[in-house]
Length: 384
Image 1: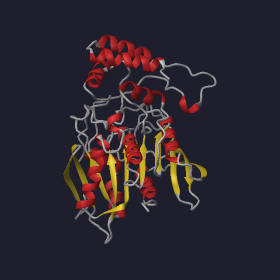
Image 2: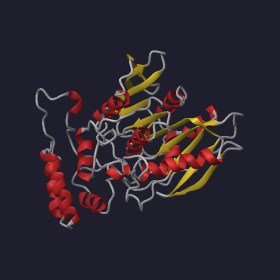
Image 3: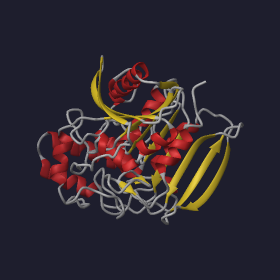
Image 4: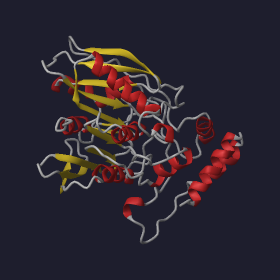
């Protein structure tokens, strides 16, 4: 059903593309004024109240950003945001120059390129110094908007865990030529299906690594933040025979949007996504104070992961991280007692990688360690 918000965003997009930015700005400002929910409105689909935050910004203080890029309100820089949308991008903040990565002696952080029928992408590949004799698990990490592989690697600390557990980690790079803000294009139909667009490119990177490096084809996983989390969900749905599990941090469900206006709507109020034929095990993290991607999107990702109808046992645990962040964990186990879906909801956390390192962008060091929990979850699962 078309809502007034969706109709308004469609009109704003038309105005932007026509160069009528003042009119588009005024329209979006009016659309994003907070609306009180109805008394019987479901809790998991309430609209975000308060000022609109651009993709990549957070309503809470802890996430680290590039120096000089403070969070802005709806009226600051909206015209520039619209220019970016008109050029094919999504809202974001300026680039961050990451600190150098310290590698253990003998480890390698390779710079590689995939070339295939669907295009090319650069990527980094972490090869641990301590390599087991058997083929290693492979984790594909998809950065968020405006981030780079190096920035994301620094913020998540996943390379350090790969050294500890003996894994390869691939870090694909989204160029500005594909999206002005370097977002993965999760909201475009041509980038939401198997054997086309960005899913085909990313699957091609995995196949290159399987061909050229000692990766275990039965233990391949993909995780991402924000737009990268949405892209990870798409990959799990598009290639369930390739990926054994997915990690979605502050992301959105598969089919949650089909264009820029519906992407804004999904980010603002949530989306149920589209029913999928198959699903893979999923671990989901979302901050309950996320003002960029509505937390109800995390529930939608969980529903997609559980839609296959496998009998599961659900348990719920509440806890507090070592640095004081309260969280709720909903865990779903199969009859064999293996966790097939986990949903971590973090109190007071914004749009940032939980438990991340302060040197990277969009990290919340106070939260539970999403990277370590994802590693634990992933290594439970392998292709039959």
